Length: 142
Picture 1 (spheres, rainbow, N blue to C red):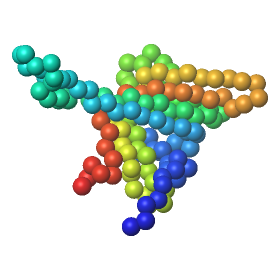
Picture 2: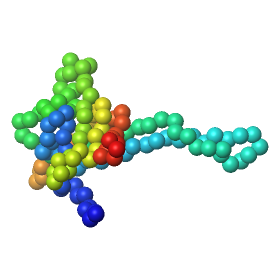
Picture 3: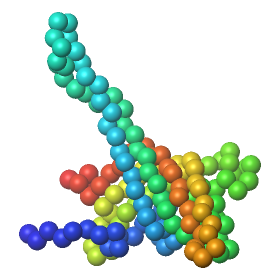
Picture 4: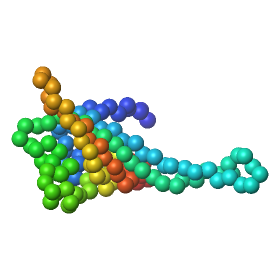
């Protein structure tokens, strides 16, 4: 079977079922934090076991005029006191354009910070950070 390298241009980002066309980058890190188990009189660990699992990531992109930034898309809606106290989880999917296969899904993501860059001769850009509960990929179903 021929293996094909996956490129960023060959995928689409979907958040809560909607394609995010303004995104220019996406990154996530999943960590399976571990701990060593030691026994008396042995300097080497007996075994290593997982303790916690975490997912963190960033979304970068450009601002579209009149859309309200990330608030307007409901991704990180903290545009009012009421919306701040009623935030919702997001589902983030990375979908292969050629096969329409979901190659990664971040479950129960919460965007918790965003920063914006405004330069005179460039599009307004943003960087938003999120935390998620778990990541699945195309291997998860097998």
